[in-house]
Image 1 (cartoon, rainbow, N blue to C red):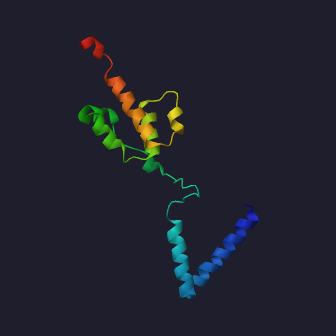
Image 2: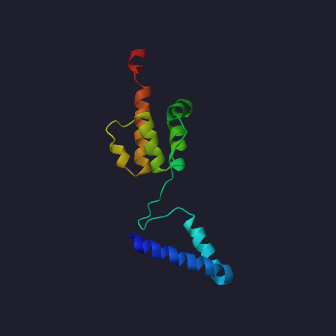
Image 3: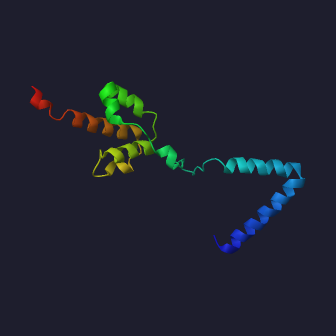
Length: 129
């Protein structure tokens, strides 16, 4: 957008705001616009914008696995979003090749986390026998 277009929009919005002070119907419409604008924007392809706070997760999948086993870990990971699962994979280094960072299916991400934790916790078991 050019500066001219932006300035035209600003002028138009100022006029609408002024009109909303005296016209009840315009005020109601403007309040609806503000309510809509305060919510996260969704693209046509239904991708949701994730805030930094929503994407950060403060769970330790390794301790959840040791306490609750595989089922407990899966149960803890299911409510998380794909972005949160990818952040867990990044944080704990479960995928050095970073191929999983492009995955969007939650089941696939959960399987990767579970498999990596299972393999890392079973290392050395061969020497116990």
